[in-house]
Length: 78
Image 1 (cartoon, rainbow, N blue to C red):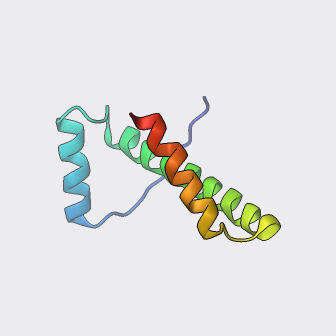
Image 2 (spheres, helix red, strand yellow):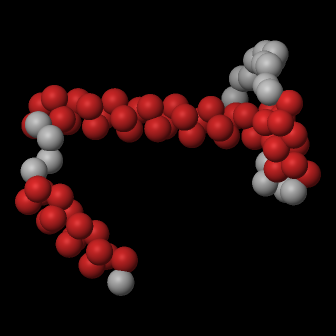
């Protein structure tokens, strides 16, 4: 993967939390932590866009749709 170096500015308390995560072994480096955070946000935004498109095409889920989903998902967890 090709990478590019950039500079970012973070509030000091947030940077301290990131550094604690690195020191705690939850990320290899500050850059790795930021990369993981950005990847998560990009994935979340992509999923939100998909949901918005589905709602535009099919409308909001009905009460019955939600009840069905709850029943089906709760069976798989058991």
